[in-house]
Length: 424
Length: 157
Image (cartoon, rainbow over all chains, first blue to last red; front, side, top):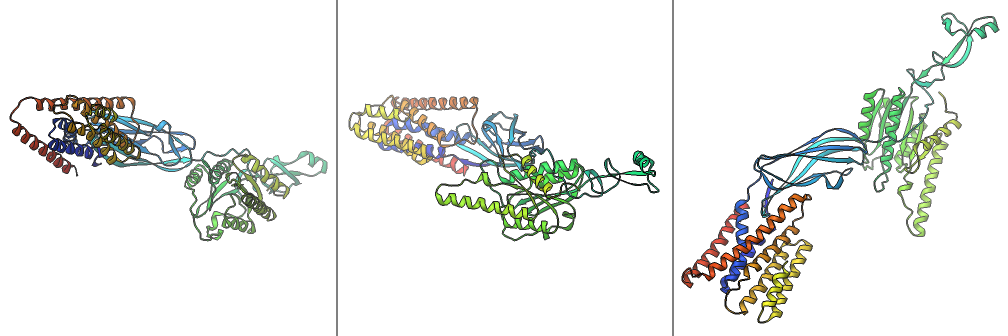
């Protein structure tokens, strides 16, 4: 900790000096009576000032938490010498908050005393945090000298996004070879009846349809649609965002992505992840709980990084976007590079569904006729962009914080149904 | 708090009360301004002017020791303590217990200031030796006090 005299010390010394000087010049003992307390206090403060020995440690009770939950931190303060006045503040990054300034306190420590200070923080936003930047200030009893320091006791804290509510998923148009929850177009072992065909050597007896066989006078067997899984890639546009007071289009996108990833993995699908923006990140499709944690950790690191370089989907490794996979894209459609990349994916034959995370609620029209006209033009441009995607065969659902994601997915589903993409 | 010794000085002034009041009001104004804008030098200048108002009363007034000087000293110390505590914004809010301890410490400091003033006045009125000797001792003591302060402050930096 750095020791420094306070302005009070200089002020008292100056007042004492002026008072004593005045007493000598005016030959009045009353002025000595005025100056003496300042001189004695300054001298006493300097004599009594001893550097305190303070040790501060921080313990974070959990390393992973969900958005909206609370996390408890314990700050342990110990002093071998004792401190008359110790101020302690835990600096909080944006996204974490403490109730009633609970992250800062003043205390007095006796020599050898150890105190544990619990601090409850609420996690207001998902993200990766480094918590443990502490500011410490100790004073001497007379307030003439301070010792200040900044301590680094940082611990990582990951706050996962609260998944948006999703009732029903988008069905992929094509499935893969592994078993899953989707009724495939192919014929094979399954539950859902597909068709009848004549018996051929090797068919199992239990598959014989006795009624049809009796009618036709020869053996006929049932065919079924097998349940298959699918490859799904969640594609997050991180080129640009629009933010309001306490949320942004990126927040909504991450929450929706979190919901999709959890749902598809529970349905035994292979799920991959791409953040396409100023910083590129990808995870190849896999199944299982480990993949869920990998993707959610990648989601927590998602951020808008300003970048003017042109990017297209060729930069992604081949196995990141498997053929016949369903690509669910989340984008505010603000940056031409993301729009171009998505249309390129559609042009390459990928099954693409787009959830437009609308920036419109975050943008006010502005006052004045020109501002309102500009706003209307912007809205019309966005409508034209949506129409361009629909002409390319991409289902677009618009979602903002005031409508539900379920409704947006419903729009996508109804477009895909009418475009004949409902079943594999 | 500086207003109390300023008012006392103005009322006790036999001559030129306007000058005393002007000095005092300037002192109060500078102290308030310094506290509001966070300038400790202005606050110190305000206290100096408040003390100067009292010093002017002593200079132009009658001979004889003013026995209320310890109270004026206590008031100036209290004004200084309050001003400097306002000028140093806290890193963290203080709980009620700590605030009570600080208030008690301030009260003891002010009381001790008054006590020191009484001792000084007692030393001045008691016949402890010849006037010239006492004057010499006083000058030496003043120089020594300032020298000690300077040495101690140098140790800090």
